[in-house]
Length: 244
Length: 165
Image (cartoon, rainbow over the protein chains, first blue to last red):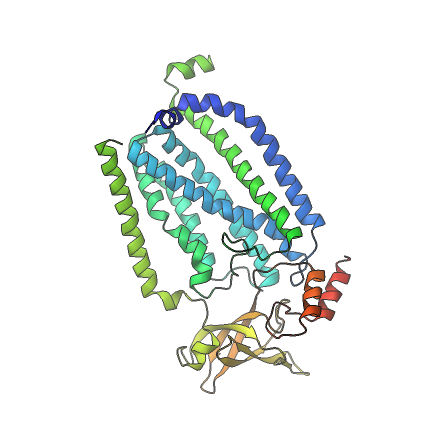
């Protein structure tokens, strides 16, 4: 098998050069998609038959929850690459993704609480879905704190990678919590195998919002990763030439 | 892939399998405790603790809601299709409390099989649709009890009027 592409991907300089070209596209597409999706979802879709207008927070809550979990999966993948192939760029990605994932997780928990108050009648319950999502936030915070606590880069990389991998067991628990146990949180609306249980005029802005959030995440991640590359490679010739 | 990397890959897979197995066993051992509420079938079968604070949840049986005219006392039956339990509650019900849709109540199950609730939360399902679609479903399938049409047509019409759509 030809591994050249894989090794090229692992080169910080190569990534720094190529990612610079992505930035304008990511900026424009994420801004446009999120704006269109939110204006469409918040102002133009019809209200829900049962919840009226309060369901509209779904256009932020669901994309944020998706991203909170997807970012963790990406971190776990980066962790496996760090441990097996010792690619520096993977560890840098793991480091810069953690605060972004934690932010999406906080957004998901906050919008969920705001949605729960008018519909369920409570801000918070300790059911399996809400609790496992809170554990995800603690995992993010734990990974950020662990890196801050270890001063050598190599040791921090290894420790954070192992913690990220151990925590990945929580992701299927979050996903299936509403099927495995009785929870106050309702089941999944968007399913891989079945038709979504949402009217099309509500579904489209939701899908656009999810795509927009993914692009926004990619943008923030790339921006942070470029800074991390410059800071870790500051002693190399190409960075010195770049800055001078 | 060289031998060292293959070995590390195996270690990573072993780590994942080990943690996965440990957590799976833990969740299996705790499976009843993780449930947020007991279903009416469990309460009827005596699986739920009597006289202790716990949660019960199910769908409100259509036509079973009786409101006291003098106070905020209300009683209704909840069902999961297998068992049925009467719930008594005094207080303000959440906005989404409607016949045929889900509730989760916190309280105690008495010896008489009546659940005395101190808190009632509404549980909505994962279906979202505009009021007109709901109305069309209502018209096509008149009052089938527990189906999605949790609200009467009049209520959803009222809501769509209020929303100005």
